[in-house]
Length: 303
Image 1 (cartoon, rainbow, N blue to C red):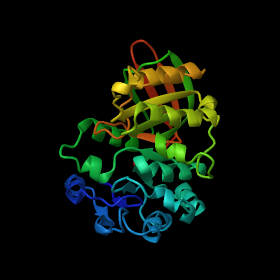
Image 2 (tube, one colour; image 1 turned 90 degrees about the vertical axis):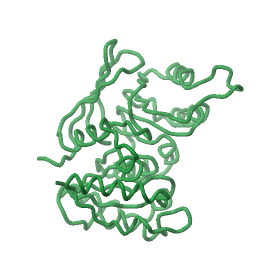
Image 3 (cartoon, one colour; image 1 turned 135 degrees about the vertical axis):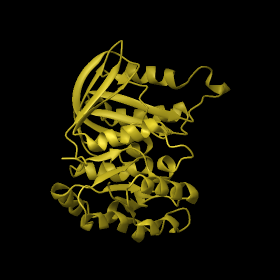
């Protein structure tokens, strides 16, 4: 049994039934859920005003309860408004002594990267409404969520595409659009020799390429050991593209880089997704038979 503490730093949860279904599923599995009052909080498209949403994050520094799972209700947009309203040092101090296990993705990547700037590891993984509240809870997602949160070392395996490699580094990344939006700000961590994992949704291949090129021209991609691409759903080309699609875009990206780009990981906005601790240590091995990502050094629910 683990306590789940809900936060809502981004968009209003328009699908209230999904959020309720997520709470019911977790409760039925023996996990109490607190801070449920934020579900209905709303100002325009946001899950409350800036003070309320930033308050969700700042309150974590005083949250009682060891090894609590902190989870956003949903993503959307809104976290970027809060970045200069949060006491990041207070959160980092709390995490050093009694770490919360903070898990989310999408717009929440902005919060996660700001925390990583302070050395705080969070988990890029499922959220309440979109995943735990889905019509059918994905067993792959559920298994990989608990695998990451309960094991001090674990491995993710898939059939990837890309050049053979065997590299080690800090695992980091998340949503591509959010990472790109943080370039030039104090809230994007400076990670050299890392393994950068990226995903996005509803972005045409040329937009994905444009964001990747921004990271490339900013010198971020070239400083990594490898790049791992997750899901990029909703990126279908059109007639004008004349064959320019995601695989073509990935091939172009690889041609500009001296580091391996490995694709095919179930990671991102899909119902089927792994959970990855951002800031942990990882080893990426890709060969003809399989790709493995072995991870350690993150906080867990079990000592």
